[in-house]
Length: 268
Image (cartoon, rainbow, N blue to C red; front, top):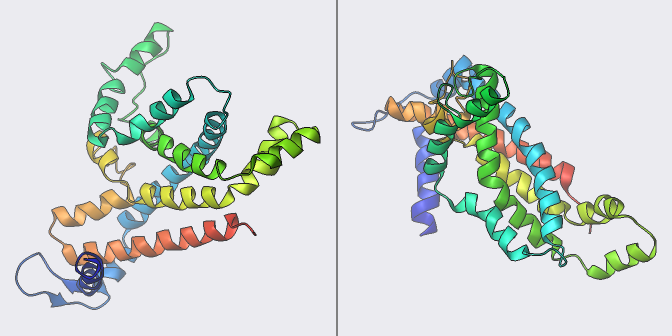
């Protein structure tokens, strides 16, 4: 199963990236032409830039919110703790296309509920999905709402592995809650945080459904992510360039992941 659905497709894609193939007929060997084309293409670099901007809008905010939420949900004294845990995970298990369609309606410039609320307090309409300035933050908000609950669950697993005696000792030493969070909790879940960052980095750079449904990559290509740009090769049946694009994306994400592993790794 692993050879059939992982190793063989990987080798096939690697070979395909050096060819010009439209999905039928014989593949024409072109060497590094596909890679050269992409590396000199403004569209390719713009898509990476859009994904990098979304990463900056999403990951720092998500980590702060997820850590705080996980700490609160890990508190045995919290009432309705089970209910809140379920509530956090519901957006993640809800179909993405359904959520994206709701986002389109809620953030519509003319009839959306968000602009309706702004009008009630005397503020003008905002082109949440039709202006380059607001399209990325709106897309980032969708991603945050959809996936933060999943990261909370991951961090909860890390929190539950911490020995409670450590906190009891800190209480005896007079350490405050914020001090315990900074000096005990975060250092002891650094590996879990590292895993979450790598996982979400992969998700952000592969982001496709969100821009496809909500903005179609616009306006003016401002939300054309690396994943969406890769899809454009498929629609044009330019499968050789698409394969090369996928490998360049893998290299970029791998490099980022190695940086995060280096920065966030902890000593035993």
